Length: 124
Image 1 (cartoon, rainbow, N blue to C red):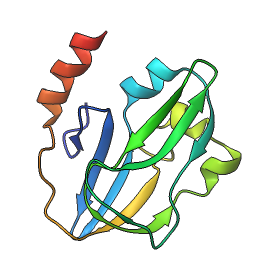
Image 2 (image 1 turned 120 degrees about the vertical axis):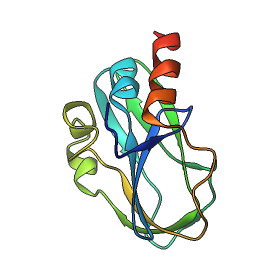
Image 3 (image 1 turned 60 degrees about the vertical axis):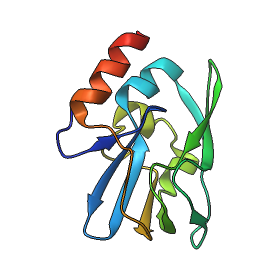
């Protein structure tokens, strides 16, 4: 469990570095989805609100919406995921990151690593 991250009940993670948030999905989420074949992400410049849909991932098993854990402006998307979506499976907390936002609000209602671990356990 990554101690420097915060989590959502919908299995996204966020790392806040000053006013920039890096966002992805958790190892638990990618495990549940199976082999990811496609990632759809918002565009640079899009404004997102916490809890708003920010894209989707498709796998051999299912398609799943992604929800933004924080509010802000998209300043970068991981374009590598267009051609290599499997990075979300192999390195969900590293090379499989999805987007960076410039925060417009303080993050709220996020889960600690311990709280998230309890939710993931209960869904297994």
